[in-house]
Length: 590
Image 1 (cartoon, rainbow, N blue to C red):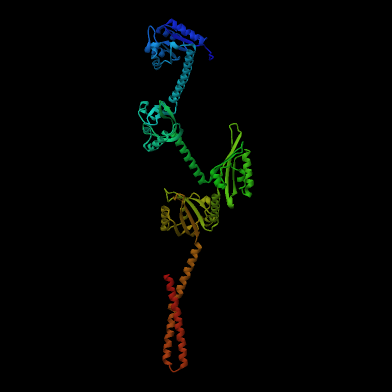
Image 2 (cartoon, rainbow, N blue to C red; image 1 turned 90 degrees about the horizontal axis):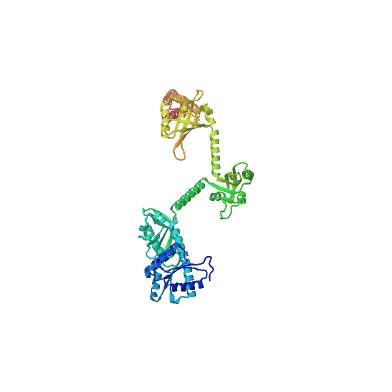
C-alpha cells in the first residue's frame, strides 16, 4: 500500500443501501484511512460535489432522479479533478465501455467487486489521473510557450505544407491573421525565387522521422517586404500528422548591421592601407599584444595567427634609433606622457623604413592603467618627399635667377598674391619679402610703357597660359634694367590652377653687350662703304693707266712684266673690296 500524506476522500453514489455498505467495507479493508461519503441520488451527489473535494467518485449507473448516459455526462462534467469509476450491474454491462467515451475513467462490474479489485482500479486511475494532469499541465505550458513566445512560431504539415498552428508573434510579424494563416501553405510566405529550395528541403524532411536543424531563408510578409529569417525546426507528431515545429527569427536588421559593420571594417582597412597606418595595443595586466593587419604589412612580420611578439618587433628597430624608441616607449608605459616618435626599422632583405609611432595610456575610471595603445605609420615616402622638397627649396633659394610664387584666384584671374620670393629676387629687384609678400606680380611692370607687353602679361594670367617675354622695368630704387620674364601656371592635385611660378633674369648686361655689337657693326658698315666708294675710285684710275702704258710700250719685255704685276695686284685689291662689301650686305640681311 502506498503511503499518502492525506487520506483519500471517496464519494460513493449508490441508491442501493446493501451495495453501498458492501462497497464501503471493501474500501475500508483495502484503504483503512480513507473517508467514504455516500449519496443516493443525483441531487445529493451534486450537493456533495459542490461542498467537498473528492479524490475519486464511484458512480452507480441507475439513480432515482438520473441514470445512464446523461448521468455519466453530468457527473463527469462536474468532477474535473478526480477520476469517475462507473459501477455497472448485469443489465448495464455493455454500457460500461460507452461510459468511458462519455468521460468516465473506468468501469467495474458490481458482481466482481472485491477489496483487491477495487484497490487496483482506484490506484490505477488515481495514478493515471496524475499523469494526465501532468500531461495537461505540460501541454498547457507548451501552448503558453508557443503562444506567448516573442519569436514567431508555427507548425505546418510536412505533406500538404499547410499551416496547422501559428502564434501571436507570427501573426504580428508577418501581417496575416491567424485565420488567414490556417488557410495558407508555407509556400505563400516565401518569395518565388525561394520555392525550388523549399521543395528540395521538403524532400529531405519527408525522408526523416527525427530531425532538428537551422538554416537561413528569405521570407515575404503580407505587405510584400522581404526579410532574412533564421529558421530552427524540429520534426514532431501533431495530432497524428507528421509536421515541423518552426522558430522563425527575423535577422534582417542583424544582417544589415553585420554588412554595414563589414563594409565599415573594409573601408577602415582600405583607409589604413592607403594611409599606411597600423594599430597596436598592449594589455598592461596580461601583457597580451594586438597588432592590426596593416601593422604586419608595414613591418613585414609574419601573421601566423599566433600571439603578437614584442621581441620580434624590437629586433627590427634600427640600431641608431633604439635609444629613441626605448625612451619613448618607457615614458608611455610609466604614464609620464604620451608617445610621438620617429624611428627606422630594418625589414627582411635589409629594406629600411621610416616609422612614426604615436601612443597613449588608457586608464580605468579610478585612474588605474589598463593598457597602452597607439598607431604605427610608414612615413618612408613622406621622408623621401621631404628630402626632395628640401632639395628643391635649396635650389630655389640658392639659384641666381629671381623666383616668385604667387597665389592665383580662378574667379579673378587678373589678381594674384605673392607668397614666396627667393634671395635672388631681392638682390635683383631690391624688394624684400616684407615689401612683396601679399602684393600682385604686376608690381614687376612698374615703369613699363609698352602696352603690348602688359596686354600679353594679363592675357596669359586670364587664360592660364605660360608666357616668356623680355621687357624693361625698374627696381625698388627706380633704376631701370632689362629682365627676361618667364611665367608658368601651377596646378594642384585636382588639376586646378592655383599658383604661378615666375622666374626672372637680369639681362641688362646682355642687352648692353648686344647694343655694343650693333654699334661696332655700324662702324664696320661705314668702313666698308668707304672702301667700296673712296678706295675703288683711285684704284680704277690706276688700272686705266696700266692699260695706256701697255699700249705704248709693247716692245719692252721687262716693262710688260712690270705692268702685268701692277695689273694683277690691282685686281686682287678689287676682289678684296668686293668681298668686304658682300659680307656687309649679308650681315644686313641676317
